[in-house]
Length: 258
View: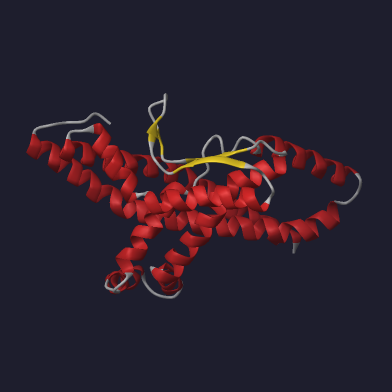
């Protein structure tokens, strides 16, 4: 039984890491395509940034509110809150921020992870139930691939499908923690690893395995589902956006180097 559980954990962790890399790359590419399309249409960088921010505002709002609310619940003082974009020195765009007082590693890590948790819950619900991806996945277990693909148009025909698709896209595009959000993760992970090593050395291995592995397995499964849904909605749009950007550049006889 222990071997089966260990294999399941490794399987879901492998799927998780396989999804994470492509998701980050496709997400960044999609953001660049959208910004470039607006830049081609307006020929003004400030307006392009403003339009891009309006589109992704629901995700930014959830991201920053998650930081703020978690800090309030954990008793960490907060400062200025911004939902307005600003270009960074490294060329990237900061969509928003919440100033928080530095606390201990545990509270800092929880505040940093809050958008991933809230965004992940939303993406899982919206993707699996509102977009019908759970229905497609269930059908894929028992039906031929062509039959499953043939059911997709019926899902897209739902009256609220594109609203939930949009919300899933913008939330999943903004839920990943930034570098500042992750600043407490490494010391917390090192501390946890040290405590785990001490527990194993003290002979608590069987107890730790029995009590921790179910939580690790569920977390790996949940993150794999969330990242899978996020990657799916990004992949659907990346090709149409690329075609639109290339078509606009050809029509306007302009080109923006990405």
